[in-house]
Image (tube, rainbow, N blue to C red; front, side, top):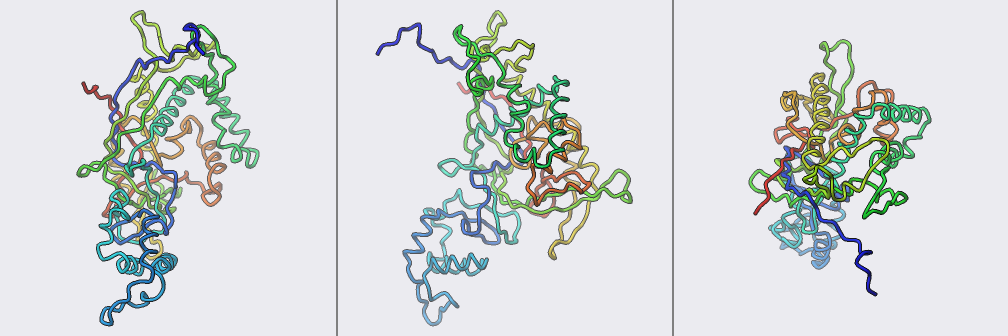
Length: 453
C-alpha cells in the first residue's frame, strides 16, 4: 500500500547537539542488582573478585572430588567431598581462608589469572582490609565496562528543571507543600503512594500539561508521555569509563552513614556527630567520561523556535524554561549551588567524634569534608547517583525542615525511621584508604566540548 506524501509523518532532525564532558571526584551509579550476596563474589584482604558464576560452577563441578594431596601435602578437611560442595559450605561459614584453599586446590594457585572465570572487569581493589558481607556494585554494560546511563543523567536534569520551575511559581509551591503536610497527618498516606507522589502533585502539571501541535494538528488528548516536553531532549549513555592511571579508578570503599546529636552542652553552634552505619560500595574515583545531548528545537534567524520544542504550548503563561543546551546547564548549575550552600552549612555545624563500634574505632572527623566545601561558590553543575540524598534528587530544598523530616519518615524503610530523633537524617561520606572521611559522593561537573571534525 502506498501512502500519499501529504500524510507521511516526517521524523524531525536534531537541531542542537553537544558533546558534554562529565567529571567527578567520586561517583556510584547503582546497578540492577542492588547488593551482591556472599555467594556472588570472593574476597581477599586486598580485593573483591566477581566471577562468571556459570564458568566457576562448571569448573568446580568438573573437578569432581577435590584432588587428593600426597601424604606430605595434606590439606585439612579438603580431601573429601566435591569442590563445589566444599566451596558452598565455606561461603556459608564465612571462612575466607577455606574458600581460598578450595579455589586454589580446584583451580590452581594462579586462579585469579583465569580470565574466563575471573575477568578483569570483575576484580575490584579494596580501600580497607577487613571482611565485608555485602557489596554494592556499579552498573556495567554488556561488555562489563562501567558507564553512566543517559536515563540517569536525564533524571537528574529533570529534577533540576522541576526545582527551577517551582522556584518561579511560589503560589503552586505553597499549594504542593500544603498537600504534602495534609498527607503526613494521615498515617502511611505518603508511604503507600511514594512512587507516584511527585507525578500526582506537580510533575504532570509542570511537564505534561501542554498542548501538543504537530504539522498543524493538535494532540491534546494524547498520553502523558507524548505531551512531556522533555521528549525533545535526548541524552545518550556515556562512553565507557575505562581506567587510565588514576582516572576512572574503581575501588570498594567504606561509606559512612552519619547524622548528629543536638547537644546544648557542646561547643556553640556545633552538634556531635552520630555514626549510624557503614555500607560497602564500589565507587569510581576521578571520573572522566563524555556523553552527547541533543535538543530537537532551534531558534531560527527570526528568533522563533522551530523543531519539537516548538510543538508544546500552554494558555496560562507557563513557558518551557530552556531553549538551548547552555540554558539546561545553567539551570543545573543553579540547582547545584543551592544544594552546595545547604550542605556547606550542614557540615560546618558538626563536631567530630571518636567512637568504638564492635571493638573497631571509627573517627568521625569531617575536617577534610569541610575543606571540600570551603568555597561558597559551587564548582559543580549537578549531583548524580547514589549518595546524593533527598536534597539532590527531589525538590526537598523548597520545603521546610518539618515537612522534609516527615516525608523521610514516611518513605524510609522501617529500620531507618527516626521520627522521635531530633537530628536531621543521615549523610553519606566515603573513607579513603587511610581510614579518613574524605569524599562527598555524587558531585559532577559538566563542560561543553567542541565537536570533533
